Length: 159
Image 1 (cartoon, one colour):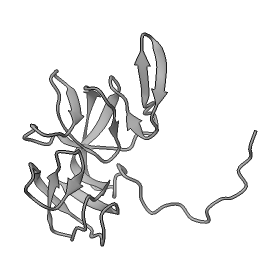
Image 2 (image 1 turned 135 degrees about the horizontal axis):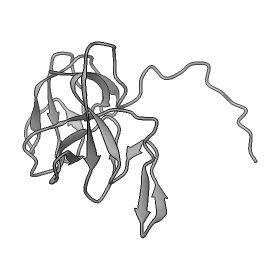
Image 3 (image 1 turned 45 degrees about the vertical axis):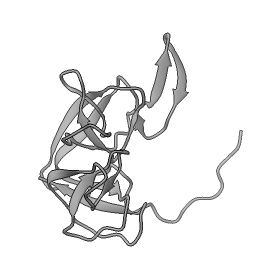
Image 4 (image 1 turned 135 degrees about the vertical axis):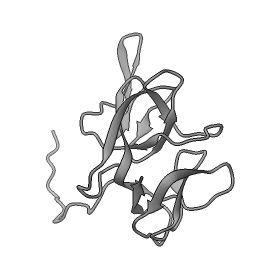
């Protein structure tokens, strides 16, 4: 068995899906629907069932919220009673996802963003600051911090 011998001196400043501060927040839970799981810090839409959700995609017209990091998420795909796959940092289909609807959360920006910009969910399930291409604005949301390039983490404030 291999033993880890190299350790970072510091922890990362943030990870996608982590709450950014301890300001009052509203967090709900919903059952993940669809064909694939949902990663942390991703926009979700209402599912077909009551209390259901799925990754925001084309055809969706409103964002329910953004998934929060949850260390208990198994990310397991089950077929015929057998675990057939495991995707880390993911809520699997059928799992209960934690979703923030008000408060602040770290997300991976799909473009360079500036504090104060509006927040949009894209049809590919990412979060950006630009309209067009089927992007839907998240009502009452704004970018709280800035980035200089796509793929960097920034804080979105909801509500």
